[in-house]
Length: 102
Figure 1 (tube, rainbow, N blue to C red):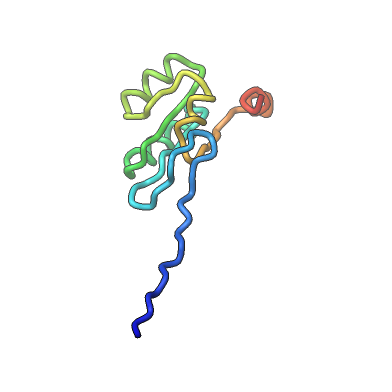
Figure 2 (spheres, rainbow, N blue to C red):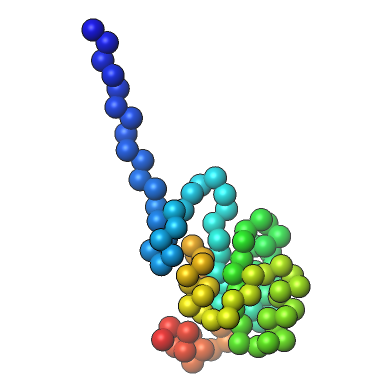
């Protein structure tokens, strides 16, 4: 009599904010808050490595520059959080960090 083997259940991680499934067949979406000197360099490198990068910076000038680099500019920090599976911060001060954290 043949016995059938049960395939173990595979848990698929889900983004807690957007509810989307996180798959391993593609690179995850990355959010970048703060696109100044350091943030712009790191977000550009991630984009060039094949990641979809969502970004936010309060400076309209910097937003325009980074959009030309291929960064998907969002209108707020919360929009970055809603779209990205991972979020990186590159902020100039503790005050800026506290503002973003609110």
